Amino acid sequence: MHILGISAFYHDSAAALVRDGAIVAAGQEERFSRVKHDWRFPAHAVDACLREAGIGARDLDAVVFYDKPFLKFERILETYMATAPAGIRSFIASMPLWIKRKMWMKSLIEEALAGYKGRVLFTEHHQAHAASAFFPSPFREAAVLTADGVGEWATTSVGLGRDNRITLLKEIHFPHSLGMLYSAFTHYTGFKVNSGEYKVMGLAPYGRPVYVQKILDHLIDLKPDGSFRLNMKYFNYCAGLTMTHPRFHRLFGGPPRKPETPLTQRDMDLARSVQDVVETAMLNLAAFAKTETGSDRLCLAGGVALNCVANGRILRENLFKDIWIQPASGDAGGALGAALAVWHEYHGQPRKADGVRDSQSGSLLGPAPDGAEIRAFLDGRAAPYRAPGEEALIRETAERLAAGKVVGWFSGRMEFGPRALGCRSILGDPRSPVMQKVMNLKIKFRESFRPFAPAVLEKEAGRYFEIDRPSPYMLLVADVREELRKPETPGESALFGIDRLNAVRSVIPAVTHVDYSARLQTVNAETNPRFHALLSEFNRLTGCAVLVNTSFNVRGEPLVCAPSEAYACFMRTDMDALVLGDCLLDKAGQPAFEDDPDWRRRFALD
Image (cartoon, rainbow, N blue to C red; front, side, top):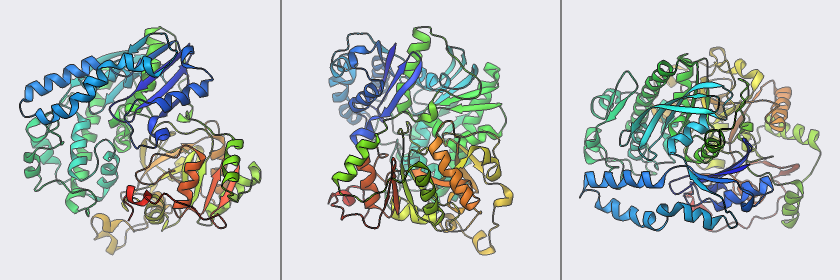
């Protein structure tokens, strides 16, 4: 039985295909369309999933959409009526897409999937999130916590997963939303909503929690049982075209930061303060989930579950013996959750869980161009390359990394979710005190404060980080071990904000954030044998079992999907070498690259 899950028309549209309960393929539309956070119907992602399975639309047994459009439309209409006439501009802006497309989802899906004659099903939004959290997890039973901006009405849910069923026990409804609270501060600090939240998380360690009490006094009422309410007079997302109300601006002493203008200490303090509040709220919810379910395992999904700092704090509080977080926790993962919900809950099919390994296959669920395709592309460009064989390629790549070179790594199936996990990665030496700055400014073309993540051999993780379990999806933050840290000098201790950036804080400074934390990925030979082999060789050469691992893209672009995109990114940046499948390319000797003349303007690099 083939079940296709679809998410679309909000942000990060995606498709996922499940065959007899096993995840065959999944991907975000942005990777194929090259439109960052593409919200449109995921036609390319659907085609990629069908190709991976070797089937056509007529072979599908069910298609499921990840929320219920009529229920969502009801919420939108009720919200506009409750705030009228204040919301008229937002109402006029949103209605055409609803009237023309969103209301007719069933017909749109049937039209897009030529040849499909089966049923079109619909899950609720948080049902899909909960299913994406629990069903791929290794647990037979677990508490399930989902939190995001909003689905139909729910913004937060707590439930219990057992075998092939999930029972939702409690919901918090719109407009009260942790995701919306965090997005309000994302907007206010000058970043883009639904894509810049991770920048706020990365900025937070540079700040001080000076606004925490003001947020608790005026913006959100947190209850010990995990429930919360927002004070809507400070927010504008119900009726307006922006997230925050002028009262919000007055409360924090001025208008929102204009995008791309210099960051101030206030921006950093705001980021730290909202991060602390959301962490407390998530801890309260996790404690409530523990009390209500009695389970000693926790599964997380929804956009807020991508906040790896909050996840790490939940883990450190020891409320649960173990937690598992859906690697595509945002809307994209809803496509996968919807498909799994139909298999297990609608069709009543059983589920296996061994308590150790999940069924997400490392979230390496996208396409993998074969060697012939890669060589045909390189030969067509007359690009010099060598194919030295697997053992030599691993050795030579590790040698380049050990010499301080930056390497683009394009290998195997593309990742599903926002994190590069060793298949579409840019790699560097974490021991270098300048690597973080070089990679941010000369390769990623992004804000200098942004931290980089370490990939570490799973069996060596405890040697570097305060963690006692795998973190395969880069969704947990742990501290660098005390004995590996370098104490601040008196001059460094006196610095504030971004001025703290350049201090060498540990023996792996390129992946050590200003608070000595790291968002780590653990790598094992079972899930990604090739990346594991590279890390092992680097460890053999250097005695260091860690690499800098950042996504293979530049600011404003989605993760590279095709060999041509990897090569273009390689040539446009200061990367030194590129691994494309079994081919190794050095920058020296490459032919002149005829670039898109609008590329730098489009991504605001000048």
